[in-house]
Each structure stands twice: as structure tokens, then as C-alpha cells.
Image 1 (cartoon, rainbow, N blue to C red):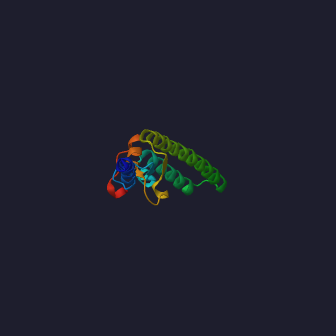
Image 2: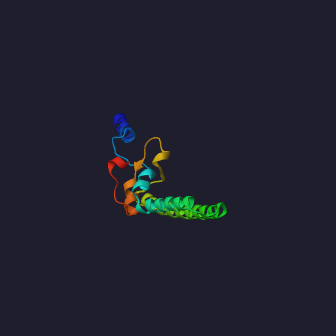
Image 3: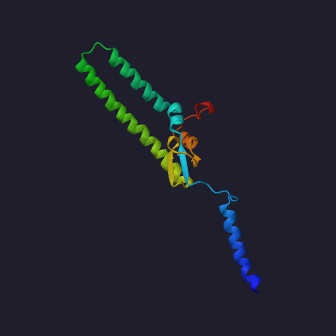
Length: 138
């Protein structure tokens, strides 16, 4: 009778050891997004970046007075800030939806993580309608 009482405890112990040893595949609750990949593959981001650079070059090479150039640069900085807020909002919305759908409790940038987590960059690219990047871009 004494041996029968120890059997359930042994099964419970075995189940705990098995679950902690990694024999059962569990998903991470942490995910990451590689922002550099998004920046290099997202046409919206690339277009905004190119437009800002073109406008900056035009201002710098213009025959405007220094005061007018300063005013134009201020407007360009304000436009840059608006576009940054827009693309950041788009990415955050996509990440938030993916995190909810896949039950992640935390999503960080690839640049901010030292180890672990699931890479959801391709999911974010799909949500933002970005063509998948080549392996060399990552």
C-alpha cells in the first residue's frame, strides 16, 4: 500500500521535470522585431527618408538667405517628426495586433535584446504589406 501512495507523486515529479527540461516545446512569451530590416524593406519608410534627404539637399543648396534656410529647416524637422510618429504608430499597431494574436506578453526590438525571444519581424512585414526581405538584408 505504501508503494502505491508514492506512484502519483513520482508521476507528478516526472511531469514537472519533463516540462522544465525542455522536452515539451513551449513558445516564448517574449518576441522581437528587427527594426533595421523594416527600415531597409518598407517602401513607406524608404520614401519618407528619401524625401527628407532630397528636401534637405534642396534647402542646403538653395540661394535662400540664412534666415530663410533656418525657417525651411525647422519646417523640415517638423515634417520629419510627423512622419516618424506616423511610421512608429503603424509599426506599434502591427506589433500590438501580432502580440495579441500570438499571445506575447512583451515585444522588444532586435537591437535591444541580448538573447532569446521569437522573431516576429516577418509577421510585422506582412501586416505592413512589406515584401519579405532577402537573408542578406537581415
